[in-house]
Image (tube, rainbow, N blue to C red; front, side):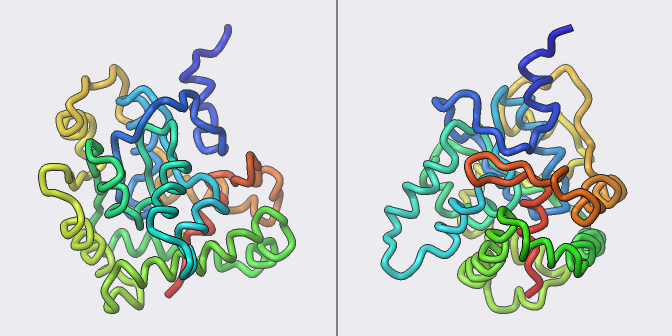
Length: 264
């Protein structure tokens, strides 16, 4: 039996494929921190908005806007952001979460959704991710795998960007970072365009905020702590080819998730 377009797209939703319809424009800026349900939200937004969602995407392109250099104008940064997000109906997770102020300005009709968790539980989960990715074998892979080499520059660029948009007290990272990030969003996003959303609440508040019908399928709940540890993390040192899938210098979501982790 032939797969539907949706089945083909979401069979591996984070494989770095370009958007199917380049004429679509950004409707949602999902600004929640990693490990707050961003992968489930990626699926939910794709179903609710019937389009492609950018979950990370091209490392080299994002590095150019994360750390553009002194001679790069804001107009050039804006143009790169629009190029990176062309054809997507939404964006989730890092590094786009560090450009909410710019994206709100560039897409005045887009709404902002910040997924939230209890701060201490979030930090516990986030630390597990950091500890997994601090494995010496993973660090070695970053040095020898051509695609992963870009992630080293990306890590430093993300750290620079965070130091630009957050107050100094965000370092060292800890449970308090969730509140600091929420304050940043409240500062740069108009109140009527911002929703703080707990994934446990499901379709109703999300679709009401977006003014779209509730999809006729269960709300996605994927990639929790256990599945994260058991799915992609072991393959960094067992079978990196299973993780590394390239498309126009992009890497899979697993590699993107790894390279966004920066210990301040």
